Length: 127
Image (cartoon, rainbow, N blue to C red; front, side, top):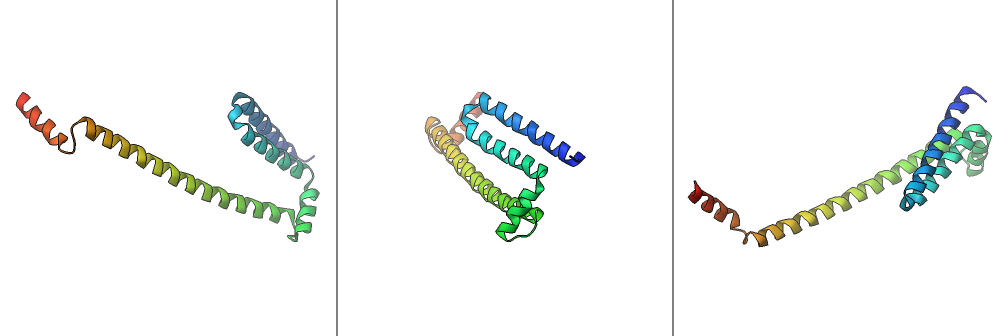
């Protein structure tokens, strides 16, 4: 094994262990942890045996394993970017709904839209 393989495989093992320990602490994230572990183990195998990746690339008509990894990473990035954008829009919409709800609740509690003017008028009598 060359030094690069030792470093990357060691990193993959550490990340796999970290994901597994997190899965046992938070059972709700178990599915994500299992997928993450599979990805890190696949990365370790591809680093240890690069001919597997090259063979898969040739079968898919790409030619080189490095190109296959690049294409997979580019597609994964696009998927994650679109997912992140959609999730951000969902959070913004939910936050807007909460702010509207709180504003309406405050308006009803304080006596309607002119309540702010009434508070200012009442506070001037105290001064």
